[in-house]
Length: 240
Image 1 (cartoon, rainbow, N blue to C red):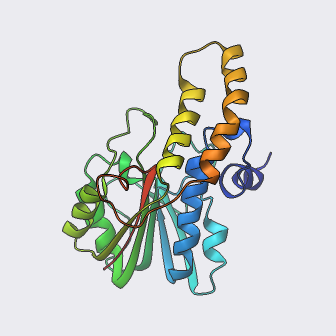
Image 2: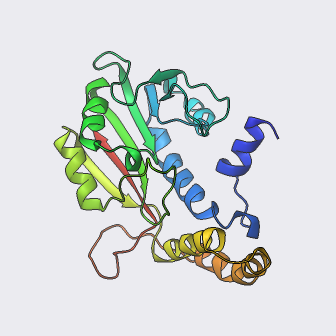
């Protein structure tokens, strides 16, 4: 399987099947958030922590986007031979002040020990009236250990982004109660200690419930601490 086939199968067209119980909920909800925000992109788009750059073609298909720049560490150990357009030290973005129009950071901020500092860097390189878009997980196990720092609430995320100088901050759940439960089931069936035979049988038995959960998920608009209080992850948009 080449890289583009892998991206298509694991990010852009994840099938609802027992083999995808782990990735179906997060990957489809992140993609939905990216598709919702992509039409607003323009000019130069910086993708921080780009990894495989799975959304590159989607972003470049927007005629208002003139340049896509993928930024990642010089030696990411988890993305094989994928080379980002820009390499950084994890502290300072190697770009001039006010040099990009839009910044995106999908599933990135939870890995940054000092989010206020990276948000200040994002603000620095973003042009006036530029856009910032990000997603973060909420229901997810420890991953990329030990570089897993935070699970954000909408209130902490808003406070940090506004403190960096951004305005017009909007935060949405990327999946509601049912998607959060489906995501937890996928994690349990993948990582919980059990024999391989039991794991395989459990996936087949649980799959109909999993499928029903994702198909009946409802995303609410406002957080209230009661009925509208559980989510699988968050997406945010803001403007400089």
